[in-house]
Length: 113
Length: 113
Image (cartoon, rainbow over all chains, first blue to last red):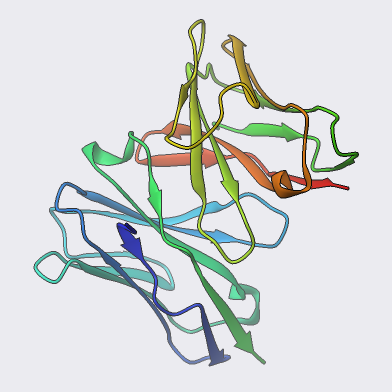
């Protein structure tokens, strides 16, 4: 039973365009959501997060949108850069993110020059 | 702040031997450390939670006698894969909960031959 789903295993985008990575969740107890970026053979690095009391959080080129009624969140990267090429993991947690995170399978983003 | 140092980054061992992976918190006291495993094209799966000075908590399906966790100090948590088999080959990552998320080690790529 996968509680956090990233249905697109890969995404290819042209440099300068927008990248949209999607994530769906099933557990209504999740109230905190995070996006992590991971390069091969490295640990994930935190990118951006959003609490369930918000529907949008923006940090530079990265914006996360949360639709609680649909149990859906998305990460927008604009403009996309070749250095953004990595695997992006969506993660969810109850209790503000301090408890065990549940991860999606990840989406491999490739930004083409 | 909140840096977790993980070693080794890569290890190859023979089947039947044991391998120890270390995670050190460099600038904070880690009372809790989460240990994850990632198989290719899969999500990060929580294996166990180590707590300083007490027994680790293992997730369902994870053999505690095979994956020995020690968290004897506030700055060091170790995972020992005992009697390793080729199916234990995976990417192992430790992480520590920080405010609004986790900080991850750089991961250990274990290959059992």
